[in-house]
Length: 191
Length: 225
Image 1 (cartoon, each protein chain N blue to C red):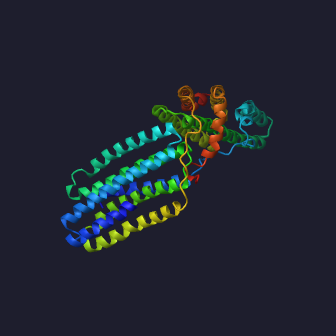
Image 2 (image 1 turned 135 degrees about the vertical axis):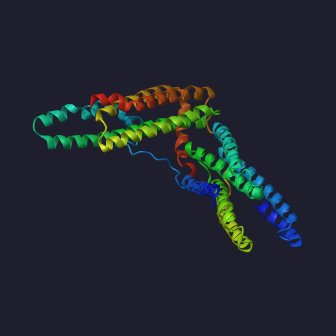
Image 3 (image 1 turned 90 degrees about the vertical axis):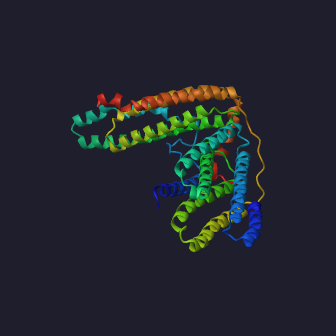
């Protein structure tokens, strides 16, 4: 088999895999949020930013270490890292919620700008890439835990701007909310 | 399916009279095949239109995506198959299936991205078309290259391997079409176009700012370590 044939065969196999994936992965991945994940407006994890920042501050760790409790200090650091990771996951959940809102607006619009949608897709991919980069660096312990505060501020700003924009939707947004749950199934929704 | 049956009915007497390897049989076979392939494109476009009719903006996006993907893959296929006149028809058939499957997969990905509901029957029809095209590319590539020299063996294996996936697809289609097709839906709620024009750039500007900050994430924080 020559080079060209191998390429075509690989492409066809990849496309078969893509069909299987598109057929059976109807619901998009929704990251597990915190305890309040079920409600919409009460679940703004960014409102817990001061507590998380406090938890990530070095002062407590340094104090415990200075007082001669290194084991306790390490345990505290591990627990706080776990909290930070949960928080990061929740932030992603909020970010995705906003993205879903953007998609919903596009679905309900009579005209959709290709450039805008392509840009949205590109930015969303970029965010995912960077999010996972930060996530894995946090997991591996090479990231400064304080850095998570910056991420929170970014999502916070986006949320506030989006809340303002969406308030203009009024009753139409309510119609959109009705549309969203029935759309959730994607290709796997069935008929 | 009716077209496929009609094609068989049309070809059978020609094969009997002129022989399966005659020039006339070849011409009739490929021309009738071209007609069924064209019909397949129209059928797929119609299904996609029915699925997306309730979402006018997304339908606009989908047909642009279909056109772009088709043109890009067409250029790639021509470049990859250039200079192989002996197998031109086989390459053209493979190229068609590749363009068809790639365009359809990109459209299915778009539907999934916007979480648009697709009726089960339509889903089975689209996936069936796509599956058959992918199998056909694989057969056109692997089987033709490796078995063509041994003609007697090639014909039997070719017939079995081409008919089998087609029958599987037909089986699924038959099962899906036992129930009546869902009704076409009108767009349920249309937002004013100006609203999309206002909100969408707003979101993207924010996303851009977030990505920019994320990009500098470590640079900002590193000195504090």
